[in-house]
Image 1: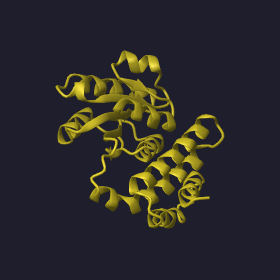
Image 2: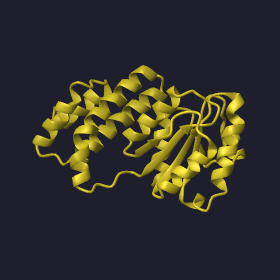
Image 3: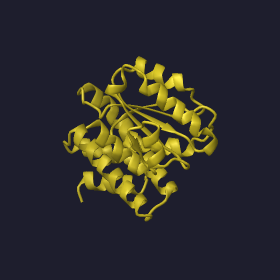
Image 4: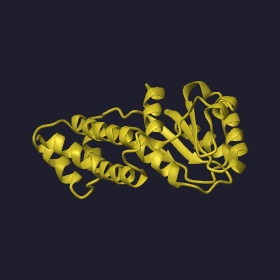
Length: 210
């Protein structure tokens, strides 16, 4: 098994302690940083598929994403030096009045694992904070909003409405998710996409940013 395949296998099962060393060994073998990164992204795609098929669950997905993160830390200086284009910026946050962050954190980790730069605004984020952050980061491709309570669905609706009024709206895609959200509600409030789990969110983000 090549170092790249070994690395992918260890990312899949979340061996965070072993991943940085394997990344270094794969680089020492002469693999370009981009190749190593893409191998890890591929491993996370496998993890996402397994999650969607109920072969693994949230804890396994989290440890795989953490292992990937450790590998990316080794590559970051090399990728920056090579001027590698990442997949783009994604701004993510849980809407005003909602303090749930486990799902949002998982989505952020999976989107980051797919090669995006993620700006995580945290929880209880006012609508205008999303707008302000897009203005500060004009290269943003996607704004992802989460609502986990039926009582915060109106806040999600308001945040999307405010984003839809902005002059930059044509340059970004708006993704929404969370337990009470449905594809119908997402369409009704004017969002571009709805996904029901973190693996689908990462796949959809890649599709929207392409």
